[in-house]
Structures are given as C-alpha cells and as structure tokens.
Length: 184
Image (cartoon, rainbow, N blue to C red; front, side, top):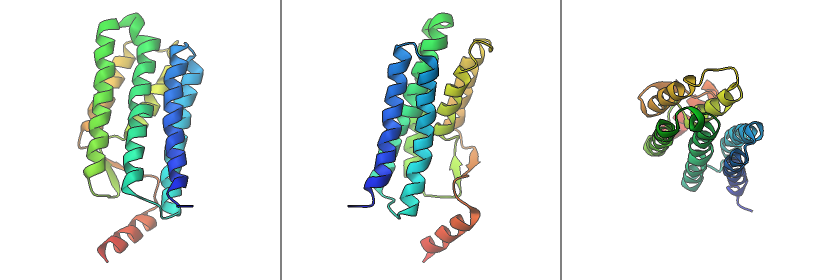
C-alpha cells in the first residue's frame, strides 16, 4: 500500500469532523460541535506528522489538507459562531463577519500553498484561528456577545497579514536538516 494513504486518512478525518461540527451546530449541540472542531485540530496535527515520518509528503496531500482546513477551520467555526451567537445579536452583520472569516481563511490557505516551505508561517494559521473561535464558544454564556465579532475580524485580518508565526511542530534540528537537504 502507498505510504501517502495513511496521512490522507487523517486529513479526511479532519474534514469529516469539520462537517460533523456543522451538522451538530444545526442540531443546536454546541459542546459536541465544538468537540468536533477540536478533533479536527488533532487530525490536522497528526496528518502532517505522519506524512513527514513516512516521508509521504505530496502536492496531493497538501491540496487535500487545505481543502479540509477551509471546511474544518474556516466554514465550521464561522457557522458555529453565527448559529450560537450572531443570529441572536448581530443577525445581518453576523453573516458578513462570518463570511469575512471564511474568505480570509481561504486566502490564507491559498497563499500557504504557493509559498516555499520555511521555519515560520506567514499570517496566523487557519487551524489556530478556527480552533480558537470554536473554543471561545464554550464561554459564550460568560462573555459579552461583542467579543465574538471583534475576535473574528481580528483573526481574519491576522490570517491574511504578513505576521510571521513560528512553526512549532518541527524541532529546530529537523528544520535545519530539511534546509540542508533542500540545498543539496
């Protein structure tokens, strides 16, 4: 069996959990929907690690990962925030703020796919932004509703910004080794 199948299983699980987050949100199950986004975060971190460990990185895997990420960390959190916060407090503007978040996430992923690999991300990763928005929902009973549009817009802007965010998943030794290999 091709080694690329194993990371793809984790990537598809990421996508599945993102889809399920939306379904559970439509059923008004906030905690389960949020848990699905958190499971997507876990699957997203595992797919890259498995691919690197098996030396199964591929352009196909990178594209599949981005398609999964836009659902799990762009669309799902935007839908969750809209359903559980915006539709009650900012119905009209909440639609546009949620759309802005998804669009910024898509732009961020497209830019990530064309930039060369380095030891940092350009812009806040969508995985962080979407996971943070989902986690923030767990505190919706204790936070003012105004927090959500502010955080969502700020995260959207940070995703498309040129802010350099260090990659934590790889050790500096691994990054140095990869740079050496790439130079050869």
